[in-house]
Length: 539
Figure 1 (cartoon, rainbow, N blue to C red):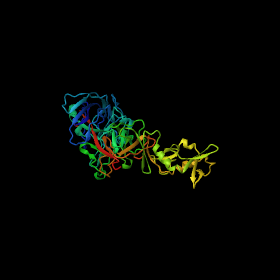
Figure 2 (figure 1 turned 60 degrees about the vertical axis):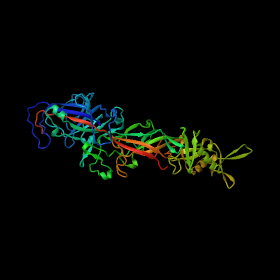
Figure 3 (figure 1 turned 90 degrees about the horizontal axis):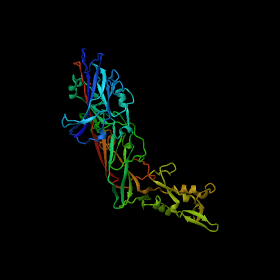
Figure 4 (figure 1 turned 90 degrees about the vertical axis):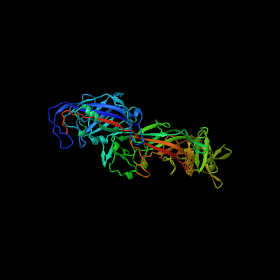
């Protein structure tokens, strides 16, 4: 059973002796008279059985409605004046009307298929004898101007702050294709025009709306075994990378899209919806795990991103590598050898020891007491690990690698090297480079870089898949009104470390004098996209 939200709108014109001319087309001819009309909004939450599987109702917050704006257009998509005079109740602009303060009560008259019904709201004035051809409904939105053409409404944008609200989500007309023709607005025809309010409410216009946002949720366990009985990935939280901060108010589609190239049957005309879209520009790379990382099994809401695999939105999982007793393991990999510390006092302790042992017979710290001169080989405390991926880093050393430089203690020493049994300053010109610090640091850049999981911190990322087949256009992507359920089954590798632990890199013939029209709005259920992931299964 699927939850739908209904609006019933009754547009009533008072009696008139004027004789209406019958248009040759399906539209009435305007005779210039202005009369009062009433717009009654009836909002209901209904259960409807749907044969097609793969949908989810959504929470009460995700279905809540604060207000509804109805935009009216002529056949060409121009703004259609429905006010004549300013509305006497909340509304705005020449071509749109607003229903506000909708109150719900339990329905007791309409049977089991209706759960809640609202009271009628909104009074307006409009032109008698002429009606718009198209209607677009937008819920919980704040228009920027008093009038929109259909094109302008189509190009409007809903930003993250609106559809990330915990109380109200922006929703707009569901967009789909009729044949190869894109349908962005609900048509209003003579069949919708009735002589009585009762008749109108019995045959309302169905306006289907969908959320502008998409929803992502990551389902994880507490820990995953990474290396048999030795190393576990303990999930800390997750975030999204390359998540779009905004979406178009009305979904952008192309009715000529080929099912084969898209990779699945993207259009669902019988249910007035579609499952693919063109998004705004690809989102920029962004920093993750700032102020709002999400705990495991939580969810977040984002805009559309259908710009392709190379710039697709990723779910990034932050974890800590631990042992069976939940003690953090600081793991380093250098020259294909693993070095492990448990609760290391300083970053990369075992790693620095291994590097120092390799270099201790090449670089020496010279000390003298005035009588005796001593040369002491490089020690672990003389070294520090430095994050790659910066302009100072050696070529090829990326952000999830580290290279080596002299530590503060090491930079306070006088550095020499042993050449053919003779100690020489590392610097070619010792007067220009006292203590050979610059020269030694430069020499250390030639040491192969390492991978260091400081305090065991690591990242795993998942390219979020859509419904398209493999290697098709819609294999990856985020589309509005979809729920992306990502379930991690297993983790088979250490992940991608970032040394700083704070950034992520990589991944409507009028014949009666009195006419009435009503409409209902159905909030379409979330479309589910389930994805199970085995991370690094071959490692």
